[in-house]
Each structure stands twice: as structure tokens, then as C-alpha cells.
Length: 78
Image (cartoon, rainbow, N blue to C red; front, side, top):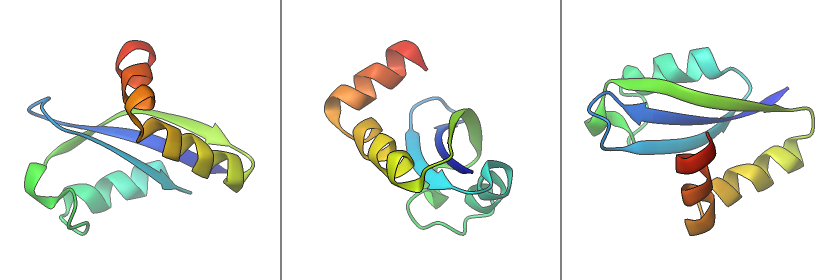
């Protein structure tokens, strides 16, 4: 399975969208500072994740969530 996940900083001011095979392990890595894109806004909370059996569809959904309309969708629906 492939998971598109949304993280929210504990302060609530920052969000991050990513793709992984293991959301729990990826959250631990983000909170350990192993990703330079998220290290300065730690700690992170897992807001939501969506499972896909097809990696291509997961990548497409991740790309959509990173777009302007995708960010609006995620704030309203996820």
C-alpha cells in the first residue's frame, strides 16, 4: 500500500504533504529531524492519511494536495 499523508505542526501553523509506505515510521522520522523540509517546525502530528493500492494514483493525489485547489480541499474536507 502507498499512503499520502498530511502532517500538521503542533503549533497548527504549518502543514506538510508527503507519500510513504509506512506513515507511522515516516512521522517518527519527521519528528526526529531527518527531513530538512520539516525539521524546523517540529513536533508534527499526523492529521490524516489516505491509502492507495496504486503508487501512480498516490503520487497524483499527493501532487493535487500540494496545488492551490488541493490545499483548499484538504483544509475543508480532510
